[in-house]
Length: 293
Image (cartoon, rainbow, N blue to C red):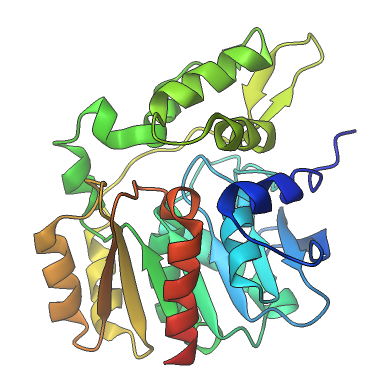
């Protein structure tokens, strides 16, 4: 069985993070209110200071480099239908449903976290969490997404979509190398070692020797109703945009601030949609600033 934490020293080296030692990380699980298991990674030996929620078709390991750079105890959740969490029979992976499913996870493992950070689908889920469990979200950092993302997708090319375009890729592959090549083509600016790590964590081998994604099929949707939650939020909100990403327009960022007057907006130059993967040190610095504000 592969040690899923064996690649953390490589994460640190690639990101330029110098540490005396890799912090302890272990996998934990929680039974959701619907009776399904939600898995997560618990970083550190003390109660998490931050919770991180990944995007669609990703998993908790997408945060590895950023969490090494941030250097605080954390809880990285595998959203239902992703990573090591169970898949839903109804395949409802909307932000509303996901928020309901992760509330018990946060209450069990990170009840006193100072911030919840969510990227893409995890960002929309974080927005919803501010409404359904405001006591668990004392500060929210939303990474490269707004409730208008469905409108942006209508005009985006495959290149604009980056690694999210892999959602349209085949479900089964003959070899592991085939998956790496496909992922590398979707993320041309990312180092091969980083792409390979992502594939290690996001695939699993079948009994017949072929490989498949470690996530369920997701349906798109109109998430514009979440703008009401942005407007109703009573906690510090920070929107982080990838400078090379088309997922958040200038108009979307303006609407974010119009809805929540105290919201902060930051752009990470050169980063694509997965800011945590493209610029982990820069994102860690922005999160650290949000925690100290």
